[in-house]
Structures are given as C-alpha cells and as structure tokens.
Amino acid sequence: MKPATRFLPFLCFATLFGCNAEKVAAPEATLSLNLSGRGGNPDCQISARDRGKKDDPLALVCTIEIPGNAITSAAKSWVDQVSGTYYLAHASNAGVEMIDIATHTWVGRVTGFVGAVGTGGGTATSNGAGPSSFTEGLPGQLWVSDGNSMLRLVDTRSGQIVASVSTAIAACDGGTETTHYCGRSNEIGYDPEHHIVLVSNPSPLTVSTPHVMTDPYATFVSARPPYAVLGHVTFPGAGNAEGHTWVPELQRFLLPVQPTTATNATRGTMYIAVINPRTVEIEERRVYYCPDFGLPLSNTNNNLRLGRHHHLLAQTCGRPMIMDVRTGEVLNVVTQVGTGDQDWYNPGDDRFYVFGADAATGVQSLGMIDARDGAWLQNVPLVRGAYPAAYVRTNEVFGRVQINAAIAANPATDDTACEVKGRGCVAVFAHVGGHEE
Image (tube, rainbow, N blue to C red; front, top):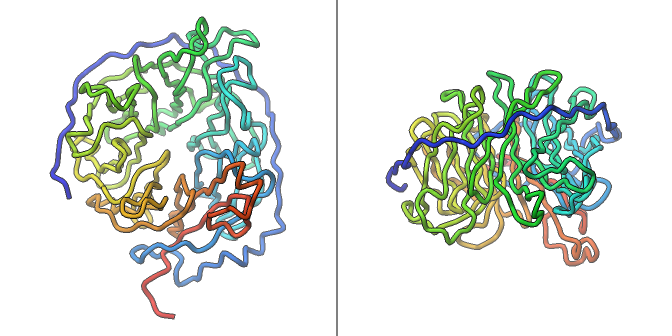
C-alpha cells in the first residue's frame, strides 16, 4: 500500500450562468415489455448457495443477450436496488434496456432517446448521442442524461419518459433549429437532502465558432415537479467535467475536472470541485498531480464513487485511488488494474468495482477492491467489458460487453464471452468460489 498523501486544497470561485427557464415535455416514450422469459434464463442459474456470498472469489457466470440492434454504441449502466432491475443506456437501440435480475432476462426497453447520432452538427439530431448515464431521484424516479443536451425523467413504475428538461445555455445554444451546440448531457448525480439533480455537459461548442470547445458546465435541476432548472456552474479552461458523487458527510457534490491535455504539467490543472447545491457554486478545488502518486500525467476518464468508511474511489491518473472523502487524503493507489468510464460500490460485499486493463496481461478485466482499506483483491477477464453495476441482495456484478461494426458484420471474429456472437451482451459475475460441490 502506498503512503498516504494529501491533496493541495485551495478556494476558488465559479463562473455562474443565470438560470434558464425549464423546458419540460409531455410523455414521449412507451415501454416495450417481453415477459416470456419470466421463467428464468436457463443459461444463467446461480445456486442459492452462491447468491449473496461476500468473500469468495468472483467468476463470470453467464451472459444475457439484448434484442434489437447489436450493442455497438452503449454507455452507462444502473441497478435499481428496490425493484432488482438492471438498466443499460443503449444508444444503438435509442433506448434504455431493462433486465430482471431475479430471472436474468431482458424484459423491456424505454424508448424516446436520441440514439447513436453524431455531434457538432448544430441540429437536434446531430447534437450528441444518448442515452448516457443514470441516477435515482425521488421514489419511482430514474433520471437519464441524453443527447441534444436533454435530461429525461423515467417513471420506473410505468417504464415511460414523463418529463424532459433542457440543459442548454446561451454560450453554446443559439435557440434556433440549427444552432444547438451544447452537445450531450452526460454524468449525473442526485442530492437526496435537497432533491437536486446535477448533470454535466462535458464538451459544449461555441455558437459563434461551433467547432471550438467552450467551457464544460453542469446544471442543477429540481427533482420535484415542475423540474425547474436551478442554475449552472462552469469549469473555466477545463477539458472535461466527469463522474461526480453526492457526499452526505459534506452535504456537497464532488466532481472531478480534467485538464485539456495530458501533457499539461502545471500543478492545479486536475482537481476535484467541491460544489454546494444550495448556493450553486464551487467552494473549493482539491488539486491532485499524478506524479506525486508515482503515476504519469493523465487526462483519462475521472469518476468518483463513495463507499463506507468515509472512503472514496477516484479514477484519476489512470489507476483507482482510494481517498478519505473528508480530507482528500489518498490512502492507496491500486496498480493492478486500470480504470474506465464508470465504477461502482456494492455495500452488500463492501467492494469497489472497476473495469480496466489488467496491469500484468493487458486484458480488459473487472477489478475488485476492498472498500475498507483500498486493497486490490482480484481481476476477472472480460474482453470488451465496461460499466460495472452490482445488486446488493445477491452481490452479483453486471458488465456491458460492446462490439464494433466490423465484428457485427463478421461474427466469426467475435472475441468476447458473449454466447451469441456478433451481438454484444450483458455479463453476470457472482461470488461462486470457495466451496466443494
């Protein structure tokens, strides 16, 4: 374990945009249900003996196929711990896929999202792909970021989009049919104390010179009807605004901000913003400098996930880092596995999960980290795997397997664990070791 190192905190002030009037749409999507699989997936049986295990090694148990288009463009995943439903943001199908965890079967799709469209074109259908990312809200709410700077509210009970809120601002949106340049909305989090959703626009372009990036920003939205936009905060000079988390101990959001390039060696270009949702401002920057931790400079995906013990998993310098959320002290840097664009904390087994390259083999793998002390425990290979999400009741972990168009066209070249080749799939891991049959 590496020695503890402290951040270099300093105060700063955010540049704020004025509040825009909300744009809320009527319900615009339907739920397509397929209940024929309610008997369960025969290829994905986890014994009662193994369900809910905590300390045994993880293993890949099975894969689940998604109907419709192959998984060639998909983003984040989410598990609703109340209903036991796994959600996948699947732009290839312009929808959110739903898997019933009890039966390991696909049960439906929420449609009405932008889909796998381009970006930078200035129109509603060329202003970023979606859906992208998830967070819970009030009971029955699933907030989903989408393309064209939209934030969608899905009613989990009906499986429909019931409201849409625009996160566009004047700096990147001219308000006409051909001047939409704010791009997709992306990373998203929820403050359950004040019922506020925070969603980022990571790569907006300027209206006047639409192929030049302007400052990334984040939007505060009320989770209560009529879902008003409460304000915006920007990150001047940044290259990206990444995956944030709500911290109850601080009553603040923590949001990692990337530099414009990995070669920028100036201290202070990479930081975690401490954001107050009540005042809509950045109160502090917690600065980190990768070489201080024996790691190269990086502007890779930076995401945060809060666990127990006041510990925070930060994917910052290309490796998972475990921090004390109260002080910013770095407790450990995990070197055995890389990082990806989503991580997860499962209180059921008290583990952090990441997808990244195995440091020894280079193979994409699911990494398991002890949340108590930040120690690396295990890597499980999953070629083309990403976006872990876990179900607390059974301690199962799910990962999306995405292929490319060439593999879809020639399934014989598929090198993934998916049972049906040329399609992509959702992989299921469980703690199945540690006993004799």
